[in-house]
Length: 172
Picture 1 (spheres, one colour):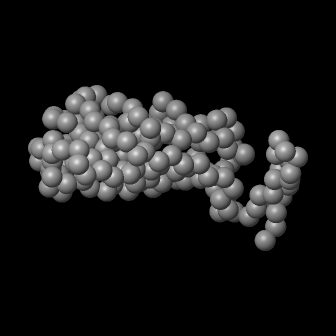
Picture 2 (picture 1 turned 45 degrees about the vertical axis):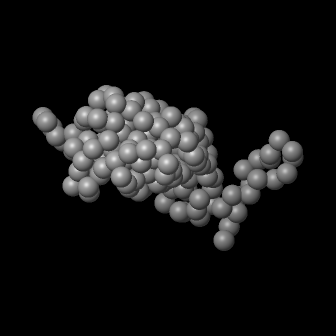
């Protein structure tokens, strides 16, 4: 396994990073321990669910992972999420007309209701082609009612923790 020297830290210790394809060379993560709710039918930033990372190379990829706990105020509430890089929706499904183009959603088909929270996983490999600081965030909206993160819709006596993580992957 080869290592490449990429400069020094502010404390003058060397920074060694692997130079083989697929290596993870940096990782940033945010954990949301509080709750969030919205009645907005327009995409709204999910407070506390964003990470910023500065890629070392424009050819490297950023792997975004996450786990979000969601609930709705009723079985007819559709809670919809988008993954956003800076201000651009990424990892969006193809849709037209009345079809919602989203990253993921929770629907009444999963019996989403006020009595439960459901875990939604996120995995996306992005190609930002940049060495500038890049922010990834989640946005959400509802079709009706209220959407909740990290709590049940019925009451606030059951809570969960959600995370979002960005990892820089050496390009292959």
